[in-house]
Image (cartoon, rainbow, N blue to C red; front, side, top):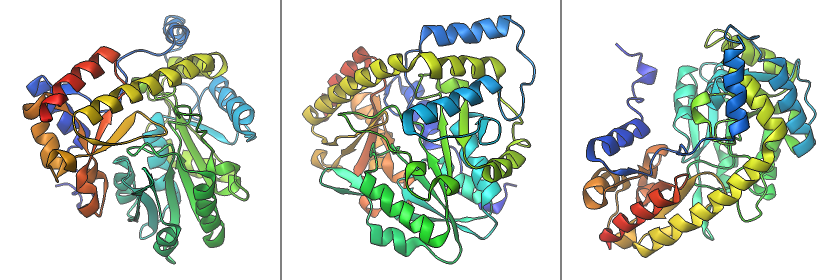
Length: 384
């Protein structure tokens, strides 16, 4: 009975692989959630808010404290000035923010450009809007995933209305360079495109690489819907507190849709995240350094097990090429991996429209305790 436009979207690969881990007792390096909590003071603020009686509907756009904290964060970190009353909207995580933006800003029949591999909610949101996705591939060049500007330009048609830009990029770990962002911005300006930017890993970049919001580029603030969230930054993925920064016209459009999806989200969590944005960024800096060490720990182990390993500049994830181990199909490989080595990973090919070159890649998450990483690496050595 499912409508035709949604029939390609069944159980997500994350649900499939997590169920596989539970069924087999394998170590789950598939789904990207940390196994340690965020800053204690943030958690305490949420508990205090609950016990203090803040358990009814907060304002639809978000509690004023969080909208002001987001505005201050954008100004202090990136020099982007947003009015907390008219240019910031709190959402139920980044997934709702992106979906509501696509539903609000993309007419049926429009085309939306995405970079593949893409996060799996993007094509579903596009389908719900009755729009069509056009995927531009990220390919490995000099050890990192990047795109060909000519291919990106060729993806634009008279029907193109928007582009979704994810940097730091899940699942490849790429952080787009200023030159890559400039190419995207030039195309948006030339063709009057809206950019929806998924920046949930904005604080989790490594080796001195810095995230640059697309909205900071010339002519882009007025045409960019900037999305971020607390989940990855503060290790609270289950809280589902996200936000959008954009012009009043774009915010109004997205809120018009969002109010009929969830209306609002948890007031206690919003207040706790407001505290975290103001007072816990030193904690985030420590988290970033810790994750860089975990990344290196997992990369070393994966290389020793025989994988070709690609070094990410951001996110929770390491991409590997499985061909040195004698395998060529990532989906088949990851379905057998619990049996072969007692570990679960994610096949990257499921995030592509054009899978031929992508079948070789498998994604592992390093946002786990050191002892979990070490145990998984010890098991993976059996592959060699």
